[in-house]
Image (cartoon, rainbow, N blue to C red; front, side, top):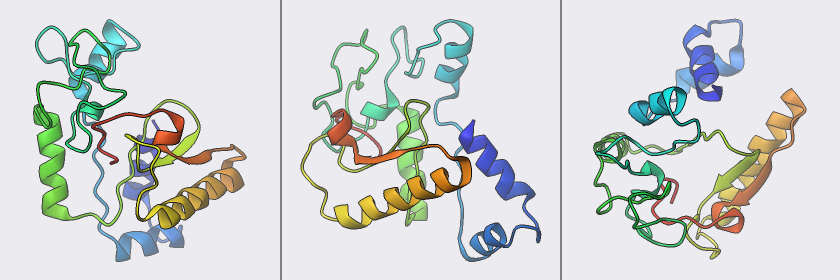
Length: 173
């Protein structure tokens, strides 16, 4: 629900919150509230821990369906696995649609909210190797964690995704 709260705050923002007004006046913000609506609905109706879309009888983990390190560690070729990566990179219409959005908009920043753990992750996820821009990614993650702590008193830990749990084919990478 974090993303819905942020989007709502942006949509309802007016002159009362100068920080949000300045951000929205100077930045093009695109909110994709849900990339996996059929899987999300299934997680409420049938299987609370479901993470895949609803392709055929098995589904595809959309966060293992991206080209960088597709099929690597943390992704499964088994359609019955919760981390099934699909037949090939970008095999799913949801992944293709997000790819097309990124190509059209060329975002400066991509923030991907997940519902598990109190971590702020940055690339790489598929390896423990350091991303070329690791210093700036790490600094941004630390700043985010600091702001969350100062506003809500909740600790988030910045880390590369690969240092936590390796996963090939993620959108973040």
